[in-house]
Structures are given as C-alpha cells and as structure tokens.
Amino acid sequence: MFEWSRVRGKGYKWTTLLRTQLLHWIGLLVAVRLVFEMLHKGRLDNENTGLVILLLLALSTFIAGIHLGWWGGVLGAALAAATYLEEYVWIFLIIGLAVLAIVFLWKHFAGSQDK
Image (cartoon, rainbow, N blue to C red; front, side, top):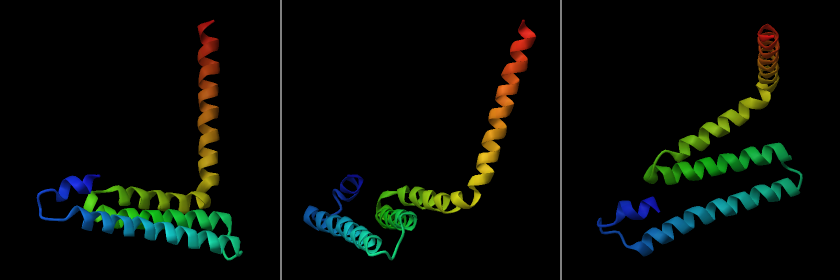
C-alpha cells in the first residue's frame, strides 16, 4: 500500500509493482511451507520451526522494508528477543516474583498503617 503511493508519478507500471510484490510474498509462503515440511519429517522441532518462520518473516519484511520503511527491523528485534528469552527466562521469572512480593508487601504495610 505504501509502495503504491511512493512510486506514483515516477514512471513505474502498476503491473510491474504488483508482479514484484506477488513474487516476493509468494516466495515467503513457499519458504514457510518448506519449513513445515521439515517439521513434519522430523528434521525440525516445534520451537525451532517457530524461530525459523519468524526469521523468514523478518527477512522478507526487511527486504520489503528497504523500499517501505522500518518494519523489518522491528521483526528482527523480535527474533533476537525470542532467541535470548529462553536462555534468560529464569532471571525474568525471579525479577517478576520479586516485584510482585514488593507490591504485595507495600500494599499490606501501607494498608495496616491507615487503620
């Protein structure tokens, strides 16, 4: 949609733009289908399949984003976060429990002083 407005008046044919976009996103769908084939044949597990598909989506959006904007970077950052989240999930869990304990104690002691 954004690309249509960017190329308007620059001498590009709409059919060329449509063909390019269709081939780009159909290529992504074919790649995702191949990843699912590898999942069904046991070459990938569920977790890695999700990460590979996210990587494919980030790459495809990045390539389209060269012409459109910054969305490819957002998906790339999401992939990096998902990659490291599993490694550090226990740290996030401890921090979350500590925050919950502090909030609970704060409310408990603040409530008892009001009485």
